[in-house]
Image 1 (cartoon, rainbow, N blue to C red):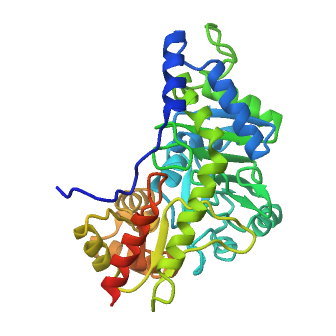
Image 2: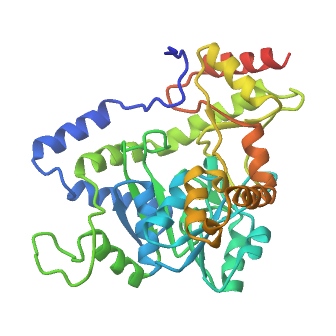
Length: 384
């Protein structure tokens, strides 16, 4: 097992976070309570949303948001081919069908031109993903949804602090969903948040996440609901983290600039930046370059932990099996099924290119200037 000198993920907790969690434990109230109310209020203020609810994690936040929009079996949701598997599995969880859409070739984000080719009479919504800490072009996507009469659920799992033309992501669509997993800009270990601007959707979210009732302790359930709650222990952590959000964003900006400086003028290599109109709160430092898998091995051998970019959804084994089992292809011979798959894969050129040429370098609050300089030196050494 490799002992890493520089890791991909290393959450930073200080005395403020520790004291708040201990105080919550001592209070005896560890399920959702006042800390969770405070956490939601702070998140609503940051995102500019009038309404918001918590969820156990980012994937379930998406599932909750989809249910809140009334989506379910038979509906299709357009999902970018480059994203974490949770985007698609949330659609499958509610019984709907994720439809993969190839991404743009510059920033590898949701592409409206390619999405319109995938619209059918079953298409009910799109799920733009604000990937790696930058925003999709929300001007285009708002027009797109209006033009084709589609709902929008924003996957802003990596989007805390990210804005499009000054407006926080998550506030453009019918619902916006966030994650607080250990590697996110703000972390509660596990956790999620769904925001919206429509009171009717909000009321539905409240019922869906709390067993179909508004108040705990009641055993009369007006609606079908589930348990999508968080705990005050997590919220206590989140509240303290949010107090440091501006500092965290500033540090990430400095680290990103160090990467840009350290890897500039390196032929054939580029760092994934932010599209015009978006700021950048880097989730990872994503670079693209030749022989990227060999570079990853080189860095790992130097004690620098790397991560691949996201494997294209259309190539995920579970998605391939699901599609085969839910289409006419299951009746065809294996060779013909494989031919269908290969032909389809050829239509996702940008997603395939990203997988073949992209790599994630570390980006977290314990990363030092010396760490970034060491990483850049190792990258330059490989390409020299």
